[in-house]
Amino acid sequence: MNDNYFAILMAGGVGSRFWPVSTNEFPKQFHDMLGTGETLIQKTFSRLSKIIPQQNILILTNEKYNQFVLEQLPMVSSRQILLEPAMRNTAPSILYASMKIRQMNPNALMVVAPSDHWIENEAAFCSDLQQCFDYCESQDVMLTLGIRPTFPNTGFGYIEFDPSAETSVKKVIQFREKPDAETAEFFVESGKFLWNGGIFIWSVETILRAFENFQPEMLNLFESGAELYNTENEKDFIQRNYPKAENISIDFAIMESARNVYVLNASFDWNDLGTWGSLHEKLSKDDAENAVVNASVLLPNSSNNIIRTDKKKLVIIDGLHDYIVVDRADVLLIYPKSKEQEIKSIANEASGLLK
Image 1 (cartoon, helix red, strand yellow):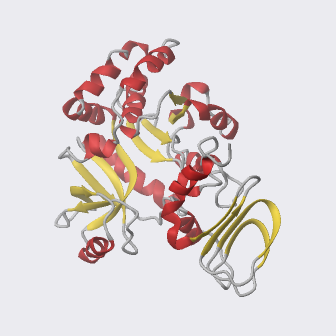
Image 2: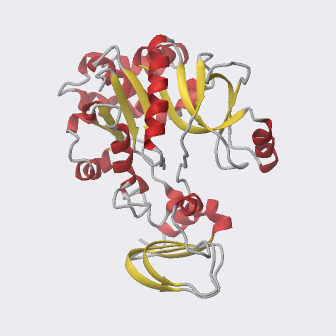
Image 3: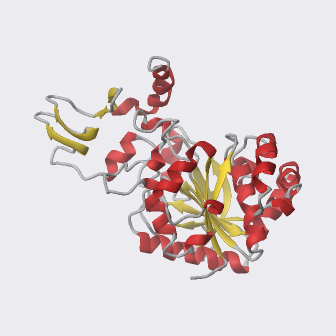
């Protein structure tokens, strides 16, 4: 393996659309959402370690999830876990990790990868990632892996690219926010748009230069403790200064302004597992399209449901179609799949009733 390869595994999100399984206290990346025997963060770490040395995989998470990471990834040392003392979105967290990586290896090539994605063909993922590393090693560019749209999804951001280039790596024209249905149809039909999978590849030199150009104030904040990274004084510096950083995503902070952004059309199937409906798509199903996790079921006259329990509970449902059914110790959710985007707000409302 190449010692210049590093990964930033992003594991700080809450995944509130997977409520009541995913909660602020125990978010989805630490759950076995697919019923495979591995949690999402375990599957992602395993996938990355096929091409990146394990000791070069840094896990970015909120400080309250530190114990989950240590329990689920026992091969990881505490120095690999970067604890955010405050929620500040992806730009500050990526900058923090990049500063640490530069101290470890100034020639580093990095991938930023969310911890909660579903990727089945891991060999194709590694092949695409290798191509990106090779490209970034010789070019001053920031690369992202785009996903070919299979339908006009309104829940994803999109990447518009220049199709004229004969190479597989295309120049990004612009990033587009989640569209309405009509716009999403146009994106898909045009053939010039990819889903934004949130996977980024660059050299540590290139990304820090981008922060210098577009986020100088944030860079100065983190540079003020440059000599403290990877020392016993790092934690205190981050505790005092990290909350001062602007709450902004890497897309808004860097990617949408930079001109040296390129995209590779990923060769693997991908799902961001952002909702119960997206999980339903990837689970095995019976003849009536019912997907079941951790349950025994009798489902007469029922179709296209997703059913999950904490333990092997017997669930009997008659005449239910297109629903999410989730049974936990203190919550039973029975909710239309067509309204799954509302679960986040329902979770906020329900939290007051559970106290």
